[in-house]
Image 1 (cartoon, rainbow, N blue to C red):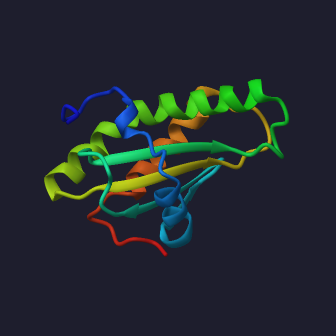
Image 2 (image 1 turned 90 degrees about the horizontal axis):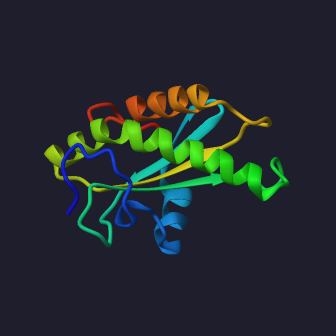
Length: 133
């Protein structure tokens, strides 16, 4: 089990299941905070954690792997810093959530842009608000 409010992003909190990621894309709610789109669904997870997250970047928009990896690294770091608020809320509600962050921008972002976008997505994901379909 992860610590409540931890700023780490351990392996068991990474969404790696093909079945779960397909479920998130098929039935999950979609929220936007350009240049990132978030998709999420409340579902039982295979690990005893509140959240499992995945980040993706289009190969069509970023041809070079180093650029895709850089954007993914920025997104993971922004998520790591913004995660505790949502994680604590889900733990108190005893829910589990799978999340996918999709970068849809056309140019290399700076960290502040990515962090503000992820923070906006996290605010929109709070369970107290109705899910957007």
